[in-house]
Length: 107
Image 1: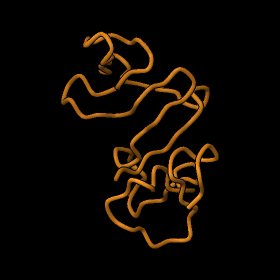
Image 2: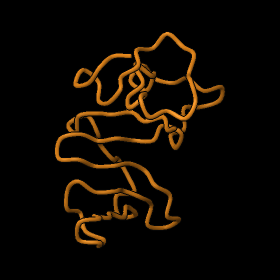
Image 3: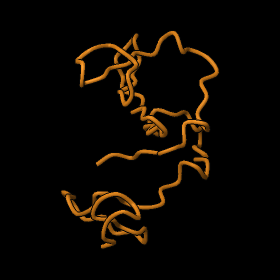
Image 4: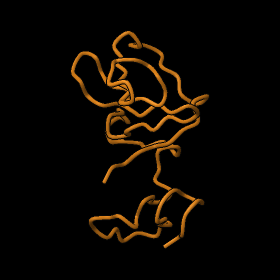
């Protein structure tokens, strides 16, 4: 299970530290920014996001939302995707999709 926030790339902007990003493309098994690719920290190796051609899938657990945390609306979970392959049940009121949202059966 992972908590992921999916954004259109036009809504993502790095204000500092871009020189510390590392990219990985599994098709060429190389450290190249060929989309889609994995994005991580070149210093510690922590995965940051998956970058697609139009979308950015970020891992909100890496963001500092302050203390106590104030999670922005854009990071609030809206649904569960690929719930048909779940390992555990999640008891909440969010919609659950067997695959991608709006492209698969709603469970």
